[in-house]
Length: 387
Ligand SMILES: *Cc1c(COP(=O)(O)O)cnc(C)c1O
Image 1: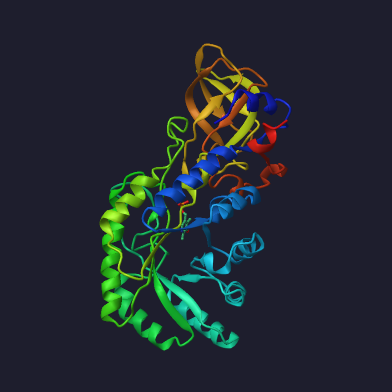
Image 2: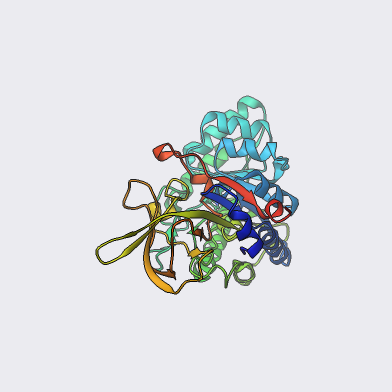
Protein backbone atom coordinates (compact mmCIF):
# COMPACT_ATOMS: atom_id res chain seq x y z
CA UNK A 1 0.00 0.00 0.00
CA UNK A 2 1.19 3.52 -0.74
CA UNK A 3 0.13 5.88 2.05
CA UNK A 4 -0.17 9.67 1.80
CA UNK A 5 2.95 9.95 3.94
CA UNK A 6 4.80 7.82 1.40
CA UNK A 7 3.58 9.97 -1.49
CA UNK A 8 4.82 13.05 0.34
CA UNK A 9 8.22 11.43 0.81
CA UNK A 10 8.36 10.41 -2.87
CA UNK A 11 8.35 14.09 -3.93
CA UNK A 12 11.86 14.43 -2.44
CA UNK A 13 13.34 11.40 -4.19
CA UNK A 14 14.87 11.20 -7.63
CA UNK A 15 12.83 8.96 -9.93
CA UNK A 16 12.57 6.26 -11.11
CA UNK A 17 13.01 4.10 -8.02
CA UNK A 18 11.67 0.93 -6.46
CA UNK A 19 9.58 1.26 -3.33
CA UNK A 20 8.97 -1.69 -1.03
CA UNK A 21 6.11 -1.83 1.45
CA UNK A 22 7.91 -3.86 4.11
CA UNK A 23 4.78 -4.32 6.23
CA UNK A 24 3.02 -5.97 3.30
CA UNK A 25 6.10 -8.11 2.67
CA UNK A 26 6.16 -9.26 6.29
CA UNK A 27 2.43 -9.96 6.44
CA UNK A 28 2.68 -11.94 3.18
CA UNK A 29 5.58 -13.99 4.50
CA UNK A 30 3.72 -14.65 7.74
CA UNK A 31 0.53 -15.65 5.96
CA UNK A 32 2.47 -18.09 3.78
CA UNK A 33 4.28 -19.50 6.83
CA UNK A 34 1.02 -19.86 8.72
CA UNK A 35 -0.83 -21.65 5.91
CA UNK A 36 2.12 -23.93 5.13
CA UNK A 37 2.54 -24.63 8.84
CA UNK A 38 -0.95 -26.14 9.03
CA UNK A 39 0.32 -29.08 7.00
CA UNK A 40 3.98 -29.10 7.99
CA UNK A 41 5.04 -27.95 4.52
CA UNK A 42 8.50 -26.46 4.07
CA UNK A 43 9.06 -23.24 2.10
CA UNK A 44 12.10 -22.31 0.01
CA UNK A 45 11.81 -18.78 -1.37
CA UNK A 46 12.86 -18.59 -5.05
CA UNK A 47 15.46 -15.88 -4.63
CA UNK A 48 15.61 -15.14 -8.36
CA UNK A 49 12.28 -13.27 -7.98
CA UNK A 50 13.99 -10.56 -5.91
CA UNK A 51 17.41 -10.80 -4.31
CA UNK A 52 17.37 -7.41 -2.58
CA UNK A 53 19.26 -7.98 0.72
CA UNK A 54 16.53 -6.33 2.83
CA UNK A 55 13.90 -8.60 1.34
CA UNK A 56 16.06 -11.71 1.65
CA UNK A 57 16.68 -10.84 5.32
CA UNK A 58 12.91 -10.76 6.00
CA UNK A 59 12.62 -14.16 4.32
CA UNK A 60 15.37 -15.54 6.53
CA UNK A 61 13.73 -14.14 9.65
CA UNK A 62 10.47 -15.94 8.93
CA UNK A 63 12.41 -19.21 8.77
CA UNK A 64 12.15 -20.11 5.09
CA UNK A 65 14.92 -21.72 3.08
CA UNK A 66 15.99 -20.63 -0.39
CA UNK A 67 15.59 -22.00 -3.89
CA UNK A 68 18.62 -21.00 -5.98
CA UNK A 69 19.17 -21.35 -9.73
CA UNK A 70 22.83 -20.37 -10.02
CA UNK A 71 26.13 -20.54 -8.16
CA UNK A 72 25.90 -16.80 -7.58
CA UNK A 73 22.59 -17.25 -5.82
CA UNK A 74 23.96 -20.13 -3.72
CA UNK A 75 26.86 -17.89 -2.68
CA UNK A 76 24.46 -15.06 -1.86
CA UNK A 77 22.28 -17.43 0.18
CA UNK A 78 25.27 -18.62 2.24
CA UNK A 79 26.50 -15.06 2.79
CA UNK A 80 23.01 -14.01 3.88
CA UNK A 81 23.22 -16.57 6.68
CA UNK A 82 20.86 -19.29 5.46
CA UNK A 83 21.66 -22.75 6.76
CA UNK A 84 23.21 -24.80 3.92
CA UNK A 85 20.69 -27.56 4.62
CA UNK A 86 17.87 -25.10 3.77
CA UNK A 87 19.27 -24.30 0.31
CA UNK A 88 18.11 -26.15 -2.80
CA UNK A 89 19.75 -25.66 -6.18
CA UNK A 90 17.90 -26.05 -9.50
CA UNK A 91 18.79 -25.08 -13.08
CA UNK A 92 19.33 -26.91 -16.37
CA UNK A 93 22.90 -25.74 -16.90
CA UNK A 94 24.82 -26.06 -13.65
CA UNK A 95 28.53 -25.64 -14.42
CA UNK A 96 31.40 -27.44 -12.66
CA UNK A 97 32.30 -24.55 -10.35
CA UNK A 98 28.67 -24.13 -9.34
CA UNK A 99 28.32 -27.82 -8.50
CA UNK A 100 31.63 -27.77 -6.62
CA UNK A 101 30.63 -24.69 -4.62
CA UNK A 102 27.33 -26.28 -3.63
CA UNK A 103 28.99 -29.58 -2.65
CA UNK A 104 31.76 -27.92 -0.65
CA UNK A 105 29.12 -26.08 1.33
CA UNK A 106 26.89 -29.17 1.79
CA UNK A 107 23.69 -27.60 0.52
CA UNK A 108 20.43 -29.41 1.22
CA UNK A 109 19.68 -30.64 -2.26
CA UNK A 110 20.47 -30.42 -5.96
CA UNK A 111 17.35 -30.42 -8.09
CA UNK A 112 18.78 -32.41 -10.97
CA UNK A 113 17.40 -31.66 -14.42
CA UNK A 114 19.09 -34.24 -16.67
CA UNK A 115 20.96 -37.54 -16.66
CA UNK A 116 24.25 -35.96 -17.84
CA UNK A 117 23.96 -33.53 -14.91
CA UNK A 118 23.47 -36.44 -12.49
CA UNK A 119 26.61 -38.09 -13.84
CA UNK A 120 28.68 -34.91 -13.48
CA UNK A 121 27.45 -34.29 -9.92
CA UNK A 122 28.32 -37.89 -9.07
CA UNK A 123 31.83 -37.48 -10.50
CA UNK A 124 32.53 -34.17 -8.75
CA UNK A 125 31.14 -35.48 -5.44
CA UNK A 126 33.41 -38.52 -5.84
CA UNK A 127 36.45 -36.26 -6.34
CA UNK A 128 35.55 -34.28 -3.24
CA UNK A 129 34.93 -37.44 -1.22
CA UNK A 130 31.39 -36.43 -0.41
CA UNK A 131 27.83 -37.52 -1.17
CA UNK A 132 25.49 -35.26 -3.10
CA UNK A 133 21.89 -35.02 -1.91
CA UNK A 134 19.62 -34.89 -4.97
CA UNK A 135 16.02 -34.54 -5.98
CA UNK A 136 15.16 -35.44 -9.55
CA UNK A 137 13.26 -32.74 -11.40
CA UNK A 138 10.60 -34.55 -13.31
CA UNK A 139 8.87 -32.99 -16.27
CA UNK A 140 5.23 -33.75 -15.47
CA UNK A 141 4.06 -32.94 -19.01
CA UNK A 142 1.11 -30.94 -17.76
CA UNK A 143 -0.46 -29.31 -20.79
CA UNK A 144 -0.69 -25.65 -20.01
CA UNK A 145 -1.66 -24.51 -23.50
CA UNK A 146 -5.34 -24.85 -22.74
CA UNK A 147 -4.95 -22.60 -19.73
CA UNK A 148 -2.33 -20.26 -21.21
CA UNK A 149 0.03 -19.99 -18.26
CA UNK A 150 3.66 -19.38 -18.61
CA UNK A 151 4.60 -23.01 -18.66
CA UNK A 152 7.69 -24.97 -17.73
CA UNK A 153 6.09 -28.38 -17.24
CA UNK A 154 5.53 -29.41 -20.83
CA UNK A 155 7.31 -32.34 -22.44
CA UNK A 156 8.89 -30.20 -25.15
CA UNK A 157 10.52 -27.60 -22.92
CA UNK A 158 14.01 -27.78 -21.52
CA UNK A 159 13.22 -28.36 -17.84
CA UNK A 160 13.41 -31.67 -15.99
CA UNK A 161 13.59 -35.32 -17.00
CA UNK A 162 10.71 -36.82 -18.98
CA UNK A 163 8.78 -39.99 -18.19
CA UNK A 164 10.15 -41.85 -21.22
CA UNK A 165 13.66 -41.53 -19.79
CA UNK A 166 12.70 -43.20 -16.49
CA UNK A 167 14.48 -46.52 -17.01
CA UNK A 168 17.68 -44.81 -18.09
CA UNK A 169 17.37 -42.53 -15.05
CA UNK A 170 17.04 -45.47 -12.67
CA UNK A 171 20.11 -47.09 -14.20
CA UNK A 172 22.06 -43.84 -13.85
CA UNK A 173 20.95 -43.47 -10.22
CA UNK A 174 22.03 -47.01 -9.42
CA UNK A 175 25.42 -46.37 -11.02
CA UNK A 176 25.91 -43.07 -9.15
CA UNK A 177 27.64 -44.10 -5.94
CA UNK A 178 28.25 -40.57 -4.69
CA UNK A 179 24.65 -39.47 -4.99
CA UNK A 180 21.82 -39.98 -2.54
CA UNK A 181 18.30 -39.72 -3.98
CA UNK A 182 16.13 -37.76 -1.56
CA UNK A 183 13.17 -37.05 -3.69
CA UNK A 184 11.31 -35.46 -6.51
CA UNK A 185 11.12 -31.95 -7.78
CA UNK A 186 8.41 -30.50 -10.00
CA UNK A 187 7.79 -26.92 -11.06
CA UNK A 188 4.99 -26.54 -13.58
CA UNK A 189 5.04 -22.87 -14.45
CA UNK A 190 4.51 -19.37 -13.17
CA UNK A 191 1.67 -16.92 -12.50
CA UNK A 192 -0.82 -19.78 -12.13
CA UNK A 193 -4.11 -18.39 -10.83
CA UNK A 194 -6.36 -21.45 -10.83
CA UNK A 195 -5.82 -24.51 -8.69
CA UNK A 196 -6.52 -27.37 -11.17
CA UNK A 197 -2.93 -27.58 -12.46
CA UNK A 198 -1.65 -27.93 -8.89
CA UNK A 199 -4.12 -30.77 -8.24
CA UNK A 200 -2.90 -32.45 -11.43
CA UNK A 201 0.69 -31.90 -10.33
CA UNK A 202 -0.06 -33.86 -7.12
CA UNK A 203 -1.49 -36.72 -9.13
CA UNK A 204 1.63 -36.84 -11.29
CA UNK A 205 3.88 -36.69 -8.23
CA UNK A 206 2.12 -39.68 -6.64
CA UNK A 207 2.50 -41.68 -9.84
CA UNK A 208 6.22 -40.95 -9.99
CA UNK A 209 6.74 -41.82 -6.31
CA UNK A 210 5.10 -45.19 -7.00
CA UNK A 211 7.35 -45.79 -10.02
CA UNK A 212 10.44 -45.01 -7.95
CA UNK A 213 9.26 -47.37 -5.23
CA UNK A 214 8.90 -50.18 -7.79
CA UNK A 215 12.46 -49.41 -8.88
CA UNK A 216 13.69 -49.72 -5.28
CA UNK A 217 13.91 -46.06 -4.27
CA UNK A 218 12.00 -44.62 -1.31
CA UNK A 219 11.13 -40.95 -1.84
CA UNK A 220 11.31 -38.83 1.30
CA UNK A 221 11.12 -35.33 -0.16
CA UNK A 222 8.44 -34.02 -2.51
CA UNK A 223 9.20 -30.56 -3.83
CA UNK A 224 6.27 -29.14 -5.81
CA UNK A 225 8.06 -25.95 -6.92
CA UNK A 226 6.50 -22.51 -7.12
CA UNK A 227 4.22 -20.84 -9.60
CA UNK A 228 1.42 -19.42 -7.47
CA UNK A 229 0.09 -16.30 -9.21
CA UNK A 230 -0.83 -12.84 -7.96
CA UNK A 231 -3.43 -10.27 -9.04
CA UNK A 232 -1.77 -7.83 -11.46
CA UNK A 233 -5.10 -6.23 -12.39
CA UNK A 234 -6.38 -5.28 -8.96
CA UNK A 235 -3.42 -5.36 -6.61
CA UNK A 236 -5.01 -3.07 -4.03
CA UNK A 237 -8.06 -5.34 -3.72
CA UNK A 238 -5.98 -8.54 -3.59
CA UNK A 239 -2.61 -7.79 -2.04
CA UNK A 240 -2.24 -11.36 -0.76
CA UNK A 241 -1.67 -14.44 -2.94
CA UNK A 242 -4.08 -17.33 -2.20
CA UNK A 243 -1.72 -19.41 -0.06
CA UNK A 244 -4.61 -21.07 1.77
CA UNK A 245 -6.07 -22.37 -1.52
CA UNK A 246 -2.70 -23.50 -2.81
CA UNK A 247 -1.66 -25.54 0.22
CA UNK A 248 -5.24 -26.69 0.77
CA UNK A 249 -5.39 -28.01 -2.80
CA UNK A 250 -2.17 -29.91 -2.31
CA UNK A 251 -3.26 -31.25 1.08
CA UNK A 252 -6.47 -32.54 -0.50
CA UNK A 253 -4.66 -34.22 -3.39
CA UNK A 254 -1.38 -35.42 -1.98
CA UNK A 255 -1.49 -37.85 0.93
CA UNK A 256 1.83 -37.66 2.74
CA UNK A 257 3.38 -40.87 3.97
CA UNK A 258 5.20 -41.24 7.29
CA UNK A 259 8.65 -39.69 7.04
CA UNK A 260 7.91 -37.66 3.91
CA UNK A 261 8.31 -33.89 3.69
CA UNK A 262 6.57 -31.66 1.16
CA UNK A 263 8.38 -28.55 -0.07
CA UNK A 264 7.33 -25.47 -2.05
CA UNK A 265 9.31 -22.76 -3.84
CA UNK A 266 7.18 -19.64 -4.21
CA UNK A 267 8.90 -16.58 -5.65
CA UNK A 268 6.43 -14.15 -7.16
CA UNK A 269 3.64 -14.86 -4.66
CA UNK A 270 5.85 -13.70 -1.77
CA UNK A 271 7.31 -10.49 -3.17
CA UNK A 272 5.35 -9.18 -6.18
CA UNK A 273 2.75 -7.06 -4.40
CA UNK A 274 5.07 -5.34 -1.93
CA UNK A 275 7.07 -3.68 -4.72
CA UNK A 276 6.28 -0.59 -6.78
CA UNK A 277 8.21 1.19 -9.46
CA UNK A 278 7.79 4.92 -8.79
CA UNK A 279 8.18 7.31 -11.70
CA UNK A 280 7.66 10.95 -12.70
CA UNK A 281 5.88 12.21 -15.78
CA UNK A 282 8.45 13.74 -18.09
CA UNK A 283 6.00 15.00 -20.73
CA UNK A 284 2.37 14.73 -21.72
CA UNK A 285 2.34 14.66 -25.49
CA UNK A 286 -0.60 14.97 -27.88
CA UNK A 287 -0.79 12.46 -30.71
CA UNK A 288 -3.31 12.68 -33.59
CA UNK A 289 -6.05 10.75 -31.75
CA UNK A 290 -4.41 9.97 -28.45
CA UNK A 291 -2.49 11.46 -25.60
CA UNK A 292 0.79 10.01 -24.41
CA UNK A 293 2.09 10.14 -20.87
CA UNK A 294 5.85 9.70 -21.04
CA UNK A 295 7.30 8.39 -17.78
CA UNK A 296 10.92 8.41 -16.68
CA UNK A 297 10.67 4.67 -15.88
CA UNK A 298 11.32 2.34 -18.77
CA UNK A 299 11.78 -1.27 -19.78
CA UNK A 300 15.34 -1.23 -18.49
CA UNK A 301 13.90 -0.75 -14.97
CA UNK A 302 11.07 -3.29 -15.32
CA UNK A 303 11.20 -5.50 -18.38
CA UNK A 304 8.11 -7.68 -17.89
CA UNK A 305 5.81 -5.68 -20.22
CA UNK A 306 8.40 -5.66 -23.01
CA UNK A 307 9.51 -9.27 -22.41
CA UNK A 308 6.19 -11.06 -21.85
CA UNK A 309 3.57 -8.51 -22.87
CA UNK A 310 2.73 -8.37 -19.16
CA UNK A 311 0.54 -5.56 -17.83
CA UNK A 312 0.95 -3.86 -14.47
CA UNK A 313 -1.60 -1.64 -12.77
CA UNK A 314 -0.56 1.99 -13.34
CA UNK A 315 -1.68 4.79 -11.06
CA UNK A 316 -1.24 8.56 -10.93
CA UNK A 317 -0.53 9.24 -7.25
CA UNK A 318 -0.64 13.03 -7.32
CA UNK A 319 -3.51 14.20 -9.57
CA UNK A 320 -7.18 14.43 -8.60
CA UNK A 321 -8.31 15.71 -12.01
CA UNK A 322 -11.17 14.28 -14.11
CA UNK A 323 -10.48 11.01 -15.90
CA UNK A 324 -9.01 10.94 -19.41
CA UNK A 325 -7.55 8.25 -21.65
CA UNK A 326 -3.79 8.01 -22.06
CA UNK A 327 -1.18 5.75 -23.54
CA UNK A 328 1.47 5.48 -20.85
CA UNK A 329 4.96 4.81 -22.21
CA UNK A 330 8.58 4.78 -21.12
CA UNK A 331 11.50 6.83 -22.46
CA UNK A 332 13.45 4.01 -24.12
CA UNK A 333 13.94 3.79 -27.87
CA UNK A 334 11.84 0.63 -28.28
CA UNK A 335 8.15 0.49 -29.15
CA UNK A 336 7.67 -2.32 -26.65
CA UNK A 337 8.61 0.15 -23.89
CA UNK A 338 4.94 0.71 -23.07
CA UNK A 339 3.12 0.52 -19.73
CA UNK A 340 -0.40 0.51 -21.10
CA UNK A 341 -2.64 1.79 -23.89
CA UNK A 342 -5.85 3.79 -23.48
CA UNK A 343 -5.62 3.80 -19.68
CA UNK A 344 -8.28 5.84 -17.84
CA UNK A 345 -6.34 8.14 -15.52
CA UNK A 346 -6.86 11.48 -13.77
CA UNK A 347 -5.88 14.48 -15.92
CA UNK A 348 -2.11 14.20 -15.94
CA UNK A 349 0.62 16.79 -16.21
CA UNK A 350 4.40 17.04 -16.14
CA UNK A 351 5.99 16.01 -12.82
CA UNK A 352 3.01 13.99 -11.60
CA UNK A 353 4.18 10.91 -9.74
CA UNK A 354 3.10 7.48 -10.97
CA UNK A 355 3.22 4.07 -9.32
CA UNK A 356 3.58 0.91 -11.37
CA UNK A 357 2.25 -1.77 -9.05
CA UNK A 358 3.06 -5.45 -8.45
CA UNK A 359 6.68 -4.77 -9.39
CA UNK A 360 8.35 -6.65 -6.53
CA UNK A 361 8.93 -9.90 -8.45
CA UNK A 362 11.11 -10.15 -11.57
CA UNK A 363 11.46 -6.36 -11.55
CA UNK A 364 14.56 -4.96 -9.92
CA UNK A 365 16.48 -8.21 -10.44
CA UNK A 366 15.99 -8.03 -14.19
CA UNK A 367 16.89 -4.36 -14.56
CA UNK A 368 19.68 -3.35 -16.89
CA UNK A 369 21.71 -0.35 -18.05
CA UNK A 370 20.33 -0.10 -21.61
CA UNK A 371 20.66 3.45 -23.00
CA UNK A 372 23.29 4.19 -20.32
CA UNK A 373 20.55 4.57 -17.76
CA UNK A 374 21.52 4.14 -14.11
CA UNK A 375 19.98 1.33 -12.07
CA UNK A 376 16.87 2.45 -10.20
CA UNK A 377 17.57 2.51 -6.45
CA UNK A 378 15.43 0.81 -3.83
CA UNK A 379 13.67 2.55 -0.94
CA UNK A 380 11.84 0.85 1.91
CA UNK A 381 8.73 1.88 3.81
CA UNK A 382 10.52 1.18 7.11
CA UNK A 383 12.91 4.05 6.42
CA UNK A 384 10.87 6.43 4.33
CA UNK A 385 7.95 6.52 6.76
CA UNK A 386 10.13 6.89 9.84
CA UNK A 387 11.37 10.36 8.82
C1 LIG B 1 11.39 -19.54 -10.94
C2 LIG B 1 11.28 -20.76 -10.15
C3 LIG B 1 10.44 -20.79 -9.03
C4 LIG B 1 9.57 -19.63 -8.61
O1 LIG B 1 8.54 -19.39 -9.52
P1 LIG B 1 7.39 -18.34 -9.15
O2 LIG B 1 6.48 -18.39 -10.31
O3 LIG B 1 8.04 -17.01 -8.98
O4 LIG B 1 6.74 -18.82 -7.89
C5 LIG B 1 10.42 -21.95 -8.28
N1 LIG B 1 11.16 -23.04 -8.62
C6 LIG B 1 11.96 -23.03 -9.69
C7 LIG B 1 12.74 -24.24 -10.01
C8 LIG B 1 12.04 -21.90 -10.50
O5 LIG B 1 12.84 -21.91 -11.57
